[in-house]
Image (cartoon, helix red, strand yellow):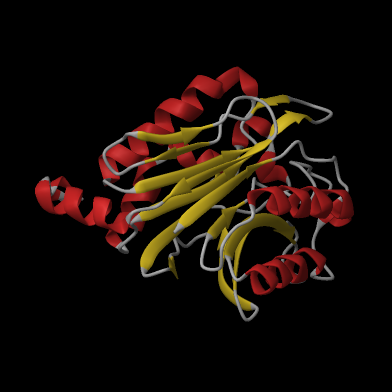
Length: 254
């Protein structure tokens, strides 16, 4: 079974254009039924604070994800802006859709990016969540969450075997993206699937660098700064064998 990380040059605040980008990338990737698809953070608009304009208030992006999952027979994770009527701020939400239009998970980003003023527009989520893909437990995370290993430990305690995150991670801190992604895989003895956007928005450049990492910390695949899709095989046996051979994960105390 394969995971497909879609590294896109997102179109600023244009839902329909970004839907078409995803569709074209999937046409080229040609996923099999049962595969997993991972999209960048706020894939439908880019990292914009104009939440009233960009919020998925009519569930267009939700319906898009549910429709893709059903049409292709895949599980797909992509983050969108949601703005509940009972909240004065929006949430940066990783939505996970599966075949038969199943909504598997709605993870709200726990760590809005304070340095980039995200908390002024997006509220923090509260709960670490997991969902199941092909009998593997997946923990969704979003961008800045990567800097907080305690979130990943909470995911591990919930049984996470894969950490899947989409990002708009800027070029100036690209080396942090790679180093921390590898660290999260090694310390949790889990697969890490990390997709970043590329190109630029009105504020920042992005260098892509989407990466897939094994539970041992080996690089399964990595992209440069150009749009593209990283497709990798996910071998559950490799995870189970490594955790059994070197069971450091069992020694958690906190």
